[in-house]
Image (cartoon, rainbow, N blue to C red; front, side, top):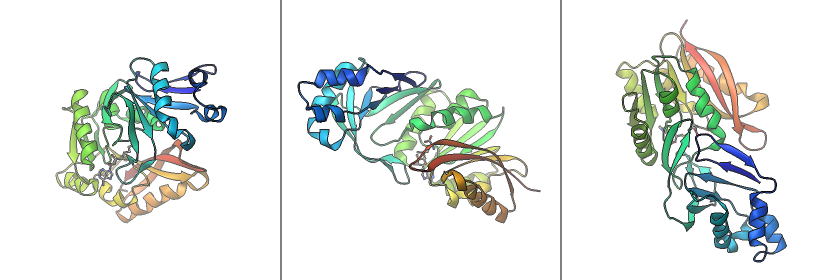
Length: 303
Ligand SMILES: C[S@@+](CC[C@H](N)C(=O)[O-])C[C@H]1O[C@@H](n2cnc3c(N)ncnc32)[C@H](O)[C@@H]1O
């Protein structure tokens, strides 16, 4: 069993070959058939005080019984069981179907990661465990005094680690979804970054232009959403300085033709009179057969 534990300062992956699945099977051996026992999940996710289970459809009738046993074998801080019945979908990247099952009915968790407190509602907001390294890594690239625009800020996935681990002058964090924005504001205050991060509730297409018209020129622009935010490139470029604005541009690619996505960015930038140089690329996580979530670091400048 691979046990991914989320509520310490860092994610720990404990491999319990003889551990929890065996434990769970032992607890359920008189109540489930051999076939059902074999279908028990290999792993599960805890975040804050909640364990989120994905169950095989054949186990759904026994879901409450299984949830009871999870609460028995997991540490005391785990107070609630929620069922994950769907994927992350749509423009707001919301979890489609996370439902309360057993224990305390409180979907608002506090997750600590890289020294930051993130509060959010697990039934409304995604928090991708696959992006953990990228959340930390981006902050290491930031130089003292930078002006940063985070165009798809969510609950502060990137803005908060940057404010914590680097010394930017200002971060403008734009978020359209009112629910995510509410937690963005909450998290800025929980972590005491009011002096560094300005949260903006709006569409980053319009808000980027408003910032640009107000004279904001960025050292770094984060475009962290996929499918790739191609339609936002022109507006994002209004924030560029004449020299050396770094864009972090995300997308989903296959490894053979990943450069097509960069070339698309480059061509759009060219029409606004900017050159683009690909500084680095990172494959953040797998995104289905042959597909990867990629981040490009692109230097944009005028000749
Ligand atoms: C889920 S985040 C992705 C964050 C990051 N890639 C991660 O997972 O660590 C993307 C955010 O962009 C927001 N969003 C979508 N369209 C937007 C727009 N037009 N303007 C501003 N925010 C937007 C969504 O509501 C969502 O919170």
